[in-house]
Length: 73
Figure 1: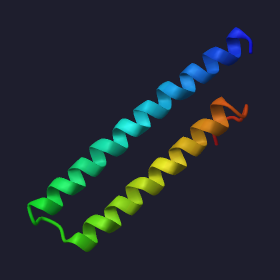
Figure 2: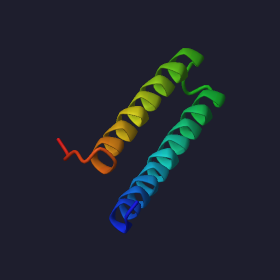
Figure 3: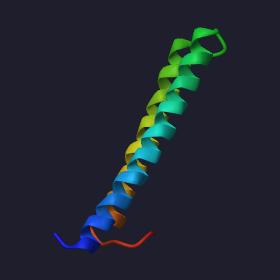
């Protein structure tokens, strides 16, 4: 692997870590609102699904851009 590939992978992992942090913060917020009764268990579950789907989409896009040589849409 050349240094350009290594740099690209490093950028990818840094971006994935940022997305992971966003997901963790989002799930913490949802859990807190559920624990305080602001939202129901069902609403919390629905919000967690949306957050996780957004996270997966973001990570797929990062992989496409950084590791598969694609450009942003």
